[in-house]
Image 1 (cartoon, rainbow, N blue to C red):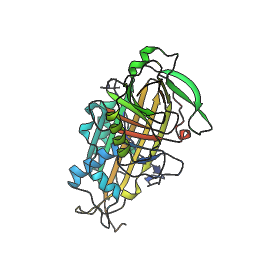
Image 2: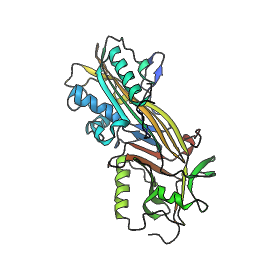
Image 3: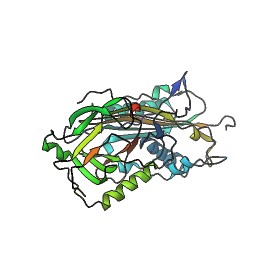
Image 4: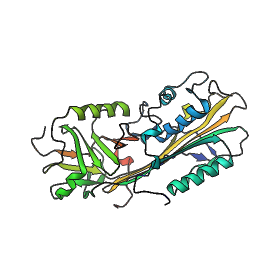
Amino acid sequence: MKNMKKVIITALLTIIFIGGSFVCAKTKNNSVEMLPAFSSEFKQQDRLWVATFQLAWNEFMNNIVKGYIMFNGGTPQNVKILNRQEFKKNMLSDDSYYTAYGRTSLALKKQIEDAIWNKFGEKSELLDNINWNDPTNAYLIYSMLLKDFKFTTRFDILGVEKFARSKQKVQYFGIDKNSSQNLYDGVNVLFYNNRFDYAVSLKSDKDEVILYRTNLNFNFEDLYNDLKIKSQKYKGSKKFVAGDKLKVPFISLKAKTSYPELCNKEILHTNKLYISQALQTADFNLNNTGVKLKSEAIMDIKVMSMPLTVKQKGRNFFFNNTFVIFMKEKNQSQPYFAMRVRDIDLYKYTGEAR
């Protein structure tokens, strides 16, 4: 890949394509719910958020609308949250993301294709599905985030066991009594309050994977704030030491969604612009050697042509029940990825240990 470092690849990617046109689809029950903003409310137990849709929204706000986005007839709560710009480009390293916006045209399409190939060695899975000749086209906003990183240590592959009440067994990795003590340096303990409430950070050169074992069912912002408070208050050992154990499931997830509540509503203080498509996908893989995250996001903007509507014993850091994953760059306070895992059957791991 051109200009690729050994850093994380994260590409937010959102697309649903049916019969030659995009459609807004609702999240199905018994699936992983994708959320547009870090503090969005949720319906599903299992859910995730990636920063790319927020990055695309920021470009729309800052460079096209040039102000808060408000809808004629009432502005949904998620729009108000997105308008806060809880995540911005300066919270990511330059080599991990790409954004573009402009008048919808084949020239813009080529600009994006050339840019993501030159920067990431990647092709878009999304752009060819846009109707570039639609007479109502106005603007296109695009973002890609690519992350592909190794942990500082290669964790041991452990046994196959159950996760919570799942009937099917899953593969785990981590550290047990037979593991080399050299693996201990790959883990930071954030806190251990009891056998149901603990968190660790898995180290890489540039990014952190934070695993938080909890049954709390807050939104991601409140979960992350709760984790930070507990980490600050914890007075026990923050080193992973002999007697401690780590167990993490291999996870693989491909998800795609659209946000229908953002679509087909006139945006106030514009020349009758509306969001035709608001789309996002994520491809996430966690194993004993590291993380891959790939995703894109796109917003297709059109103009209306008609009215539209304390350690005493060895601590077991076993992530074999409901837990939350956050990922952030080491020098940043805000995560770029969050996921709550409850139903392990939704995360079938198909990759090979690297």
